[in-house]
Image 1 (cartoon, one colour):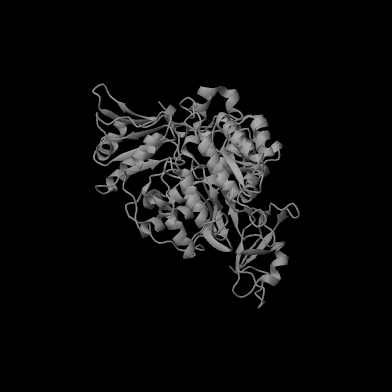
Image 2: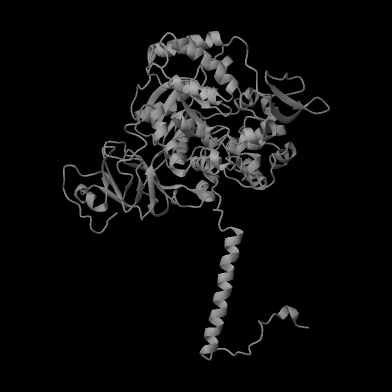
Length: 626
């Protein structure tokens, strides 16, 4: 874009990209604010004023005018199931951001009409009944009416799934199908499945049922992943730490991102974890992986970050707050200790899914036993994920052992269930973020998308700052919230520390990676209610423009068309952006009063100039003519 005052000069150190006329929040205490930034070879080379960029603009430099918009370091989701989410993204109908069940059902009905025989309509996470005006799930009858012949699977959090008649037939559930361990197939008075599946408390019944749906193959998986990464770029995400998860096998389910990385076509930096999938052979699997790869193998685009979020299946609790806290098996510590010892002795970091303090205390006892042998703290990066009910004593023990935490906005989607079970007092500090930060712990922020929370990081930032759920319920009081700067740092700097990249990521200064986002609204001044509505207009990763909208539309890289062409994403896109909240009632009334006063002043002005009569009657309303 030609910009006045910046004349291209043939220089040896010309930037590849210059973003100017911006309100840059650098995240660098040495220079917290700037107006312009230059990137060369994927790395920031200069941060300063517009005039500082003049000597860095060459004939091939792309110069982008930010038009005074807020610019921030690229966001980093510290717990995102990005690899698994990308494999089937284009097959999923997303209810993320949809404000009414009626709208969601209308989308489902339209999608069923275009879905070919043999394929499913699936709504897989990113929404909650709390966000709907109706405050409820769809019924089986509503799904049958919307799609009488096409299988429909609707997942609600880690709690339940609703299937229509065609889906029950497709998965083969009958009156003779036994309930899986930890789950329930709800049955009617005739003994036949109704279409409701309940996690009781394990979500295995939900995920094993979803696994029966058709999947993408070959190049379609890569295309789906690229479109998912572009959707994440839409919200300013430039990095993510993949937390692995169930039904994510290594290496086959990682092949799409590894091939895209080899081809130079990733638009998001990914640090990934490895999750043993087969109960009973977890330690053997970890031992095999340790022989093959090391943490931090790879590059700035794709790198191994360690094991987890499960090390052994027996040590994992469940986060279904509609059910009582699960009691983990006695004696799981013996095998768990073998896994942790193996990782620590071989320089591997790890992350652990742990919702409840009861689980965290048992895990910490194992770590403290190994600490007596000098294995903790040993420089390996390790952390607990989620930690909604972690106690102050456990946080002190985490700090002593050199650990960290990653928290997610799961309770912005399921606070009502948590409040009903544990009360508003416990919900107010679930998780206790301020207590974590006050101890100097590294606390990364993320979403845990895509099967529970939405992947939109601004929904999570809104929750961190306001304490409000997607249903606008205030759960967290002010003393358990964080300010905007702290919340942003949890989505930038803290995530970088969790992958050992704090020197080059999460901050905009010379030598750091050229990852940034130009925002649609100023995050630091927009009304709190509108934080969730922020998007990126320009997302840059390593100097590459990977997403562009608004005035910048067309500056990003072209993607292949969505395949298959009946994909819900091809018709609806991903996150359904809602309009900004607009004016409060009081402010609206105030502005209307000002308009009325202005009207009266205008009338007096007309009288003073002989353009109207003092004796003019009231406005004529023909409705009152007899």
